[in-house]
Structure formats: structure tokens, C-alpha cells
Image (cartoon, rainbow over all chains, first blue to last red; front, side, top):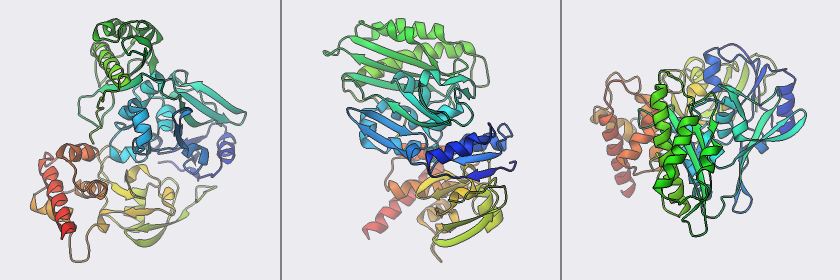
Length: 299
Length: 167
């Protein structure tokens, strides 16, 4: 690995200064599970690494039933699924956070890092979009908030400007009668990169028989994680039943713009989008009704 | 926390396997490199060096991590357990004993990682299901055994440790 400076600031202002003064030659690092791999491969060549794990704002993990959930950008995945209140309120998030790499990766990897790495196949991004999450960004010119679906701009690229850092991810409190679910297709049982991933969130009517609103987002089928608002809109007012889901799945399938690569063909990926969209919608609806739906994570 | 304003070597103070241990490293050196090449603890192995194989597994402040994906400078103030910290003087750890008795290794390069990873599991879940063990160890690759003997060894060790605890 090429040489670089290492700084571990303990305040957000200091972190931003250490990043901004390098004019794009500095890189923030939380868990390091993507950054260090890319540096070793020579794909990233920063002159300075700013370790953000000692910045209090980036370590916040706070949930309350009315205010929602704030996840600091440096909070490792295991802390999210180890928190029983968060796991109960956001099982869709746990579906994703508990399958990022294996256990050793989850000891370090963060949602903030998953976002900033901006891989089209990132496991946590589709379900964050489905749940309406927002990204809190801070930089030399102040703070801004971006919906997760607008964060990634191309493979490995995002809206962050030099000197900016993701501080936290914010999720609204789960509305009554709501549920979310994430599934991915991989050839292995675990510890693999999604061929396709789909996240869905639904809100049902008070009698839980009708879909009030839905959000669907896809992974690994476009240059960025892909929000498909029209797929969710097609479900509004429809019965919360299997027969409603095919139309949304078809819209999602048509929105996908996959490529052929070592993980799968474009045709297979299109097919998988349809299958997984139906499955995650069914899972999200079941959760909205208070039924238990297991993710891939084995307890 | 150490902050290196240039790329010179940094002094890092840690506790490794219960022993206070200080070392000097460059920011670019991984914890794996520091353990093996600076400190001389070569039980931790380098496999893929990119977080896929688990050969370099260590326990850092109570969490299982891939030491190839941790910088040495990040270990300032940390408590680290490596495979060298498993056995008591004159007595193997029950996992090590069970790996031997169940023939859970062939070439052995992955074994330290499996032992450390399995220890991290049994430390927090003394009686995991077979499925849970397989899921937990999915970040450790073995190209010799086909895994079954490793899983059996972990189950065996879990049983022994439970029994020992009951006295």
C-alpha cells in the first residue's frame, strides 16, 4: 500500500478541516472494509486517511418511537442488529445490515461506508431508500440533507464534495401498519455480493387490507441503487394481497437496466427483479400485519 | 489516538493476549502486518489480504475482525486476542483440542482463523446451532476439509466447554 498520513480527530469540525485542507486528496475511513481493500489494490490513493471513528456525531445510535432512528456514519453493522429495540422497529434494515459480508466484516463495516462506497450492489441502500431514509452531510460550507435515493451518482461515485463527510443516516419512525423487507439473490448462502437485491416498504390501511403507499428500490441492476417510485405508486389503494404484487414487480422489472457480468446475465437479473420484488413486498406486507418474517441472517 | 501528521512511524500501545505490547508502525501497515512482521506473532495468517478468507481473524476489543482490514495505528489502546492467546500454558484450548481430535484441519493455513472466529462465537453464544455455526464461520474459507469436520469440532468444543462449566 502506498504511504499516507493517518489522522484520528475527536471532533466533527476537526475531521472536516483535516479532509477539506487536502483538496480531495484525503479520504474518510470508518470500518475500512472497502477503503483499505481499494487502497491495497491501488484504486484509491489518498495522501491522508481521516479515521472518523472517534467523532461523537458519527457514533450516535438513537431510536425513539416518535422521532425515528439516527445511525451515525461510523456505527458498525453489528451494533445495529444487536440493539433489540431497533431490530424490532426496523426488521427490514436488519435484513440488510446482517448480511453485509460475514461476521468479521460486520464488526467494522458501517451503513455510512456502504453508502459512501456507492456500489450499485450495496446491500443496505435499497432498503434505506424503501424506508425513506435521509443522509446528513456536513462539510466546510455547512450541513445538508439528501434523500438516500439521490446520494449515489455512478458506480463508486456520490454527491459528496471534497471535504464533506456523511455524519449520519436518519430514518423516520415506522408509521402504524408499516413494514419493510430486503432480499438479495446470491449463489452462496451468505458472504457474497448481490446479483440482485430488492428492498420494499409498505404502509397499509388501518384494517390492514389495502396498500396505502409503497416504496421499492433495486440493487445491482443499474449504475446506482435504483429507486422505482412508479412501482410503489401502482400499489396505492390496491388490496394487500399476492395478486396486486405482479403489476409492481413488472414495473420494477422494466425499470431495471442491468448488465451482463461475472455475477449474472442481464436477462437473469431482470427475471430476479420480478421474483424478488414480489417476495419482498409479500414480506413487507406480512410485517406490516405484525407477522414475523425471517431475513437470511441465522440466529 | 495517534495522529501522524506525516507518514513516519507511529508508536502504538496495545494489549495483546493479555500482555501490554507496544510497537512502531507506518500508517499504511495493517494490523496483520504489525502482528506478523513487527511483533513476530506469526500464528495469524495472511490469505487473501482483502477480507474474504478470514485467515487473519483476530478479536479486537471483543469483536471478531479481519486484521488485514484494520490499520496497525487503529489498535492504539485496543485489546487484541490472537490464536497465540487461546491455549493456557501446557493445555490447549478446548477448540484446539477438538480440532485435533476431529481432524478438522489438513494443511492448516486457515486453522488459526477458524479457531479465533469460533472462539468469538462461543464467547458470546456457548451453545450455537449447527446452522448458526455455519453462518458465523462463513467468513472463514477452508479449501481442504469441506467444512463438516470443522463444524463438528466446534460443536464438540462447545459441548466440552459447557460440561466444564457445569463441573
